[in-house]
Amino acid sequence: MSSKRSRISLSEAGQVQVDTVERDLQSHWDKIEKAYGRAFTENVRKSIAVAVQALINNGTIEQNALFATTASDRIREIRLSARQLKFTLNKRALRDHDERALSVQLGIEIKRLGPPRSDLRETAIAAGRLVVACDRLLVKIASGQGLDEGESWKHFIRVMTTIMKKAGLRTGASQSRDKSSNDTPSPFVLLISEIQKTLPADIRRHDLVDPLSLAKKINEARRDYVDTEVSHPSQWQSDSADAGVDPAVEREIADVWGPSGSKVA
Image (cartoon, rainbow, N blue to C red; front, side, top):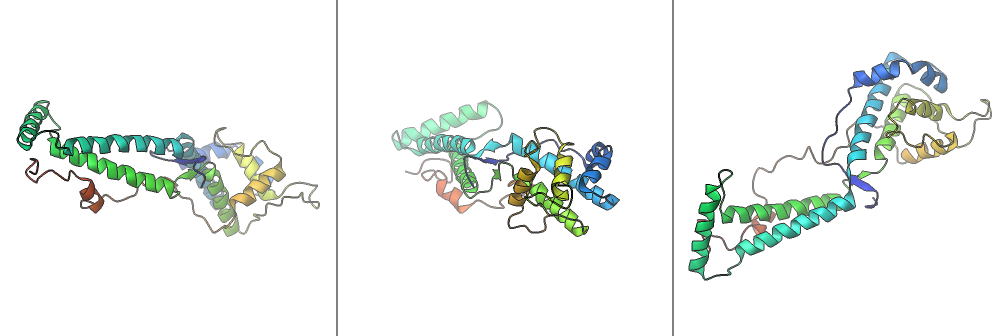
C-alpha cells in the first residue's frame, strides 16, 4: 500500500440507514433496470440497496480519514514528547533525599488540584504506556491496516459482482464495445454507471469517464476476486482491550521508581 495515498480511519462517520437508501432508489429502479437490460427481483433490489448503503457509509469514512503520513508524523511527535516526559521524571537530577522530598511535594500539589489524582510515578507510567501505544499504532499503519484511497468503491464493485453472480445475472465488464448490442458497453458496466447517478457526488468514482474506462476500473477492482459480503472496513475498533499489562509497557514504565512511589536509591 502506498503510504502517500493510504488513509487511516480513527472514528465512525454518521451512518445512513438501508431503508433511507431503499427509499432514495425507489424512483430510480426503472432507469437502473433499463440500463442493465432486465428487471430485478425484490431480493436483488434489497441486496443492491444494502451494498449502496455500505458504499455511502464506508465512502464517507474514507473521505474523512487521515492520510497515513500525516497521522504517522503526529504520532511520532506525541511519542517523542511522552518519552521525553518519562525520561525527565525518571532522571535523578538531585540528591536522592531531595528528589524524594520534591516528589512528595509535587504529589501533594497535584492532589490539591482535584481529580483525577496522580503522583509522579503514575504520570511516568502513563507516559510509558503512551509511548507503547504510539509504537503499536505506527506498526499498524506501516503494516498496511489503512484504507487505500478509493478502496470503498472497489469493495462495492466486488459486492455487486457477488450479488449478481448469486442471482445468476451477468457480471461481465468488457473493455471493448459489444458489437451485437448496438455497440453498447456491457450491462454490468451500465448498471454501475446508472447506480452512481443516485449517489452523493463525493462518493462517486470514475463516473465522468467513458464507459469503457469505467469497465477497466471495474476489472481492476475485481482482481483476485472472491465472493465478497457487505462489510464495514473500519479499522481496529474491534480490538479487544488488554486484560493485563503488556510486557512492552513494563519495559517502558518508570524503571527507577520503587513500588511505594519513591525513588530507588
